[in-house]
Length: 409
Image 1 (cartoon, one colour):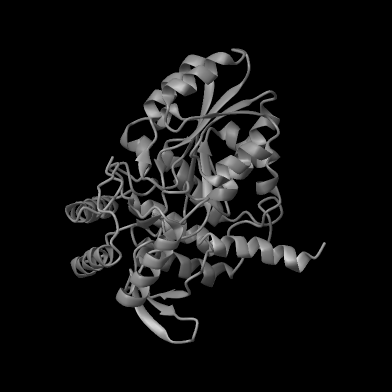
Image 2 (cartoon, one colour):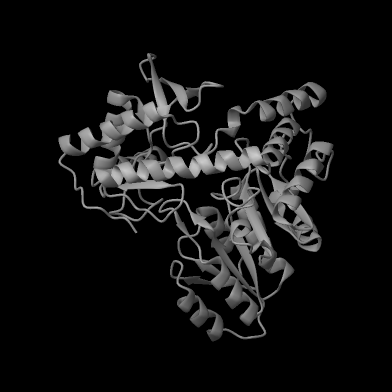
């Protein structure tokens, strides 16, 4: 085989379909979020506003977070020095896990280097703990959940997105004595719709199934203390395993699960993705702990309220222009373009002409024909930035003669 030619073929296929991913080199400016500097390929620079970031609340620049990180790095140095089992468990990791367990009302929590690893490692390990386990997975679950389910070697069933009736059919068709787990999300990040948590918990009770929820796009942003949609809806006690991230609303890095002490202990003891990974740097753990603690407070609630207001304002203004947005009531604002080439072109035009950075979202992240620009307004986006973005989108939609038929849910 000509390996080089094979790589060329794979990459050229992405280029020809218009879905080759281009990384934009940016440098965020502390204290000036969402502003950043774009380093162009030719070496020149341009001031931009980031409209697609996952630092949803701007906590990546919050003084409380930065002070905790400085204190930890001055005290302990850079890295953790090992895996959690071999010298890599510090007071910072233990404090973070205690803070997360408290956040979700669980006995324990387990911190991983990312929420992807937390999902993959946990879901791929559970069949070892429960022989014969059948996992029922929403068809739009995140790639990390899909990978964990795929790799575990056990039985799996995929139910239609948010279709509780279909899930019931699948549960009823299997052996009542077989161990079962339902895996789903609270907020699906591409359309911004919510999972039917209570209805799924009802089915889990009826069929004696465990529940596993991914709250990655909800922790910090929903609930009176930032515990996610399940906290908002007073359902945390009905969920067996809660997955979350420290890299989005909390503005740092890392992921975790929160569950019973026994469940966390079993995953800790059996999951290769946890056992053989170097632990999170203490400075990251310290920053995450400070962020989680801050967002539990009344000041954190102010940020959550402003965040939701910003999303509503942007959606209302884009709807007023007739742009094809999807609105499920969450903080995510998807604008459908429907073609990968046009989506990339619009993204480039916004960046080059208006200094507004929003990354194009194409297949396989979303289905073909639903390619989109996905905006994430935040409390640190001001009125001037929003006015500029709305005018830019209005002008480009007219210039490119794109469809303005509304696609609101």
